[in-house]
Length: 412
Image (cartoon, one colour):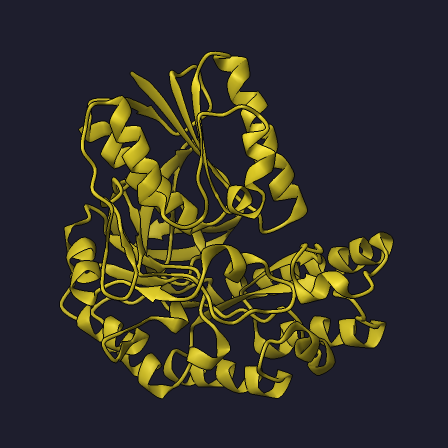
């Protein structure tokens, strides 16, 4: 039996889809991650924006074009947010963003398999380890978020923070067949298990012979204990995706972000104190309700002040059920114009960061061929291209100039 597991959205969704795929393969299924002809479709949906929800609903019609008689299982945030909209499409199963093991239990029945649903004492849902790709494994360490930012619907869909037992995380990191492991979750800064926070978990990974990279972290989670734990790892990727969302104190307050511009810049300075060559990347929203031109200029100017290596910018998208949905939206044209300026400033910042690193020697984990070159990434997530086939290799590389989306490298 052939099963297509198709994923929209974040890395957490991808990890959970990877768990689906591992279980299905163990039951004898032929599994694909791209839309293709199949007997069963498992569609893992996203609701972070209106566009993501729309694409999630359209997935059903796309799947049925390949096989009108296929069984369709739907789960994820869009299904959690509006299950009725998916049930109306006459699918076989509708789950949500939580209790993904229930999806596996329903699938197991089709294969004559038994699949128990298990949680730990903190309510974290245990799932099969996803199959690791060749170079980078994403390791889910927690689920849920307690922040309730005024623009974000995810805490209402994913629920409160539940953390995974540290010994399970360490075991999965050690066992994955990849040179790099990325700790991911909905809000990894909120990780806490039996009194052990994120710093404690990172310290527990001290004996692992892999590069450790972190997913997105929050301003409040950056302190000396956390950074010391990172620095003490054998191989730590000094890239910190430190969510900002706005450079304006007024807008940050409306967003319920719980820090000021000055406090954010203090956290950046602390990161540079521990890791002088760190890459700090971030997210910034353009056109949040009530954002003035002066507020927006604060978001533009902080890009240079913080020394960002990359900026993920996007226009505000009102989400039903959030506090910001009731605020007066910024005109579409204004949001698009500000987004364009943010993207331009972010591209300039990224170019400056890469240029600063030309001439240095850095450890690169090579991944895929692009023409005559193999592309891979440094610890600070600069994309590096070297001539020849180096897929799967870890090499010290001198960055000798700019090339394509990153830097040209020569083996040191």
